[in-house]
Image (tube, rainbow, N blue to C red; front, side):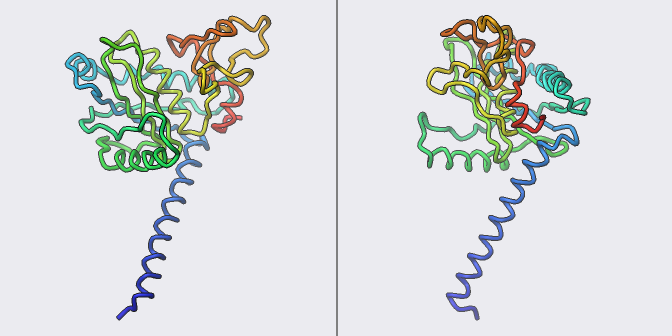
Length: 259
């Protein structure tokens, strides 16, 4: 019969082995997602986040074509950077999810952020309803009615776990902006970092500008996707209406292994 000390050592060894396997799998997933040897499979999971009837009608109307702009953006930008893939990102649409993801507190502490990240990864694994080849990246889109509100909670992208959580408006008029946010968070999962001032939300020069060498500097004609805003003047920047007005900057391209 095992002694208490031997049992404790065995238990610790098993836990360490499990942790090693998890870390190794996370590392391999990250490497595979940015080696660009094959197309990246991205699955979008829609949710009715506010329970409203108009939101539900919109979610039920969704088709894969609503997300074609996402794959088209990656195809266009990949060609600019010489990435030898005809379809670098392939987007699929899962059925609507009924379960809501865990909530992240406002202004979370570091501990709360880590705890939420772990909870989100567990939730995503437990409630995944996709029937098909295992996705490389999962993007959960929480739809909200635009009625009575003009802003949404901050969206998030987790590199560990390759998971994005996007807050979007349930209205066809916002599909361009929704696609912009989805691409931004998808790029976060691949290792791209924000290119804006977290205090003001204003794009940081030069990496957050699509044309940092433009003279005069303002107005910019396009937005850098990880900056999220189109600078019109020194103190004014607006969100692009479609991904046609957005590019992937050189630093962001390097962060996802395109340079």
